[in-house]
Image 1: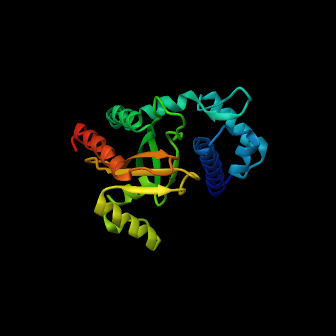
Image 2: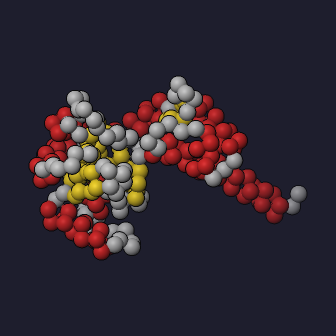
Image 3: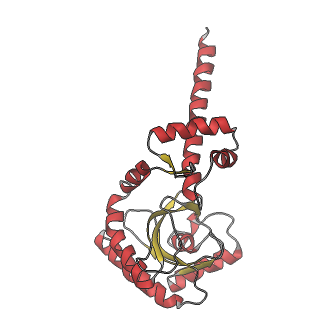
Length: 243
């Protein structure tokens, strides 16, 4: 076999391995973003691959504890994902979790920490209130474009204007400007249907911009009071990390 043929074979093999890895990661992202456990067929549809290909990928992820099944056999993220996630920004999570817990219980709403991950707003940690008739789940690892939702606006507001995402609408530019002026962001029906959010910037020295937010379904709330409570926790977290 010629050197050229060998190089082409190696390139083809590397490309196939890269595609397999990419699809495995996409399965984890799909499960993290899903509102409920998914079937193999639903995962295959999300990836745009044949059911048998999705099944092989899922089996490999199951073997590593990254995916598991519920009592009905549908797919959810595995327990191993939690231990991996716990090691991400461990010091930030350690300082944030007590504050997220306090806010969640004070306000009776799910409180979460979101960070900038490339062009995505990703939930790093989330706490649901201890005593609440109904609360909105916000799964750690869930991501959406940073240009959507209150936490995303709070994050963009901390970036230099030159680093703001391209193609922002006039309405979004105005909302981010309001965050800069008033210190908090709001959203309604932008990421999860019927769900509202309030978020404040969390500036951390030497780290990407972050935000603390709550999500709720209540029709009328004192947004400024919620923002004031969030700012108190944001300041505590920033101070603890030397911000």
